Length: 192
Ligand SMILES: [Cu+2]
Image (cartoon, rainbow, N blue to C red):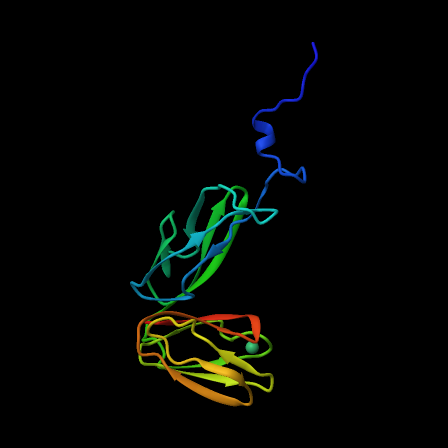
C-alpha cells in the first residue's frame, strides 16, 4: 500500500512558510495604569503567533496581590487598597503581566508631560477632572493632536519647541494624543 499525501486538515494549520503557528505573545493591555480604591477596569489580551497573526488561546488572569487589587479570571480588576500589584495573564505556556497602581487619595490636579527623547513621558497620565496638564516642549519640535475626540482640549499644532504649553481637561474620559511629526509618539491622558 502506498501512502498518498493527505489533503485534509493538517495543511490548514501550516502556513506558506511551512511553520506551524505557535503562541508567541499574549498581547495584553490595560486601559489605565492607575485605579482608585473601588475603581474598576477590564484588562484584555489578543494572543498572536510568531508571524503576528491572531491565534486562538484562552487567557485567564490572576492578581499578584489581592490586598491591593483583585482580578477575575476574565480580567476585570477592582482596586482594593493603596499600593501596586502585578496582574498576571496566563495562556498556553506563556505568562505576561501588567503593573497596576491603586491610589487612596484624589487624582492629581496638575500633571507635567515631558518629550525626551521621542516619547511623551509619562506615557499614560491619570488626572482629576479640571486638572491642568503642562506639556514641556524641548529643543526638538513636537506637537499634540487629540484626534478630534469630543471633550478633549484644543490641539497644540505646528512645530513647537523650547516652551511649555498648558491644557485643561474639563471632561472625564480617556484622551489619546499624538505628535504628527513623529508617528511613534502616541500617549494617553485619563481624566477621572
Ligand atoms: Cu514629536
